[in-house]
Image 1 (cartoon, helix red, strand yellow):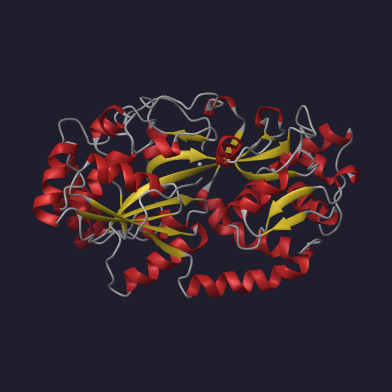
Image 2 (cartoon, rainbow, N blue to C red):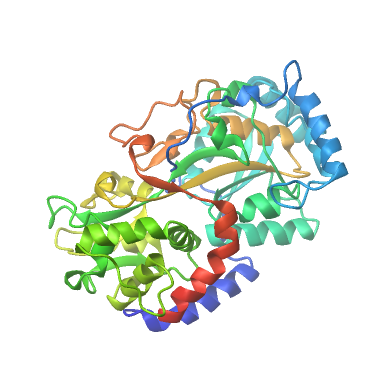
Length: 445
């Protein structure tokens, strides 16, 4: 991959070694620390979370029915059903009950010593720790900040070794890995109390417990450009952008590979976007199976600047007023305008064929969590509490992040999620095809 390209293999191997060694995990002790990530797109506005159980059926009764169904056969979505003991644990832990935060607070203190542990992909969870412990005196929130690419490996290794440390997981579903290998196997459980989720779009609740959505945007420096210099994904394959656009290393960055794999699923749209950009139909080479593959190959031929982290990407674009680079990185990095004074802007509404893909940040309770009442209390807190606007959601309710509860007041200046053109991830397609797409990228790096 051109600049810093010689480092890619080493980086990929180092990433694999880091994951297997379970590095990238940092326990947050300082309640004043901070920082983080987020989004999703259009989906039907019908259906409410409170309609999930059948008519006249309580959530607990529905859970009991589900336990029986799971014991009898496979879960159609992933082929691996949660066993009856795992589902029974969820019932016994009250994951289908709708207790108030006050009730859970008392139980957490009286029955669990006031402790709850979360593994999170966002350093902004440190802010939640501070406010949670202040809002609930006597509670202790242990936060482990874990790299998104390492989270599932750490969780799986611990769980299969009989280690039960985490109560709650906060991560991001990008490939179908969590849905197929964790939720469908009963390692992770949803907790969707009606009082919190009754107005949330039913489409978001099918597989996981959503917290907020995020996407990635193309950013530019406002000291150089008065408006976005690109409006089409194919623009970065033009000669004038040779060596002048920045990506995070896609080898080892799941979100990029999920995006590229989704491009392959929407290859016809990529072909139409090529024609809109160049004024003629795309002619594919023998080693370009689709327009999406052609985009990947031609991007690599145009000498992208590759960095190891999204922090480096946004810094290279926005620090100072003289950077001509543009970079693709999480939309939540828009907060660096205020936090660090960087000169960044993005105009995702102008991008063709879409601005990106929608990633769901979710929360889940770990099977056999040591502190289930604390876990439920924390999830309610993260969703903004009873009215959706409590302190727990505030660190994530920023420009470039979209909380799922309609009760939550949107961040000032944020683009409404439904206004953006986004591809929703087909988890089954990505799960089955991501490795082939990664191999293709690696071939031309």
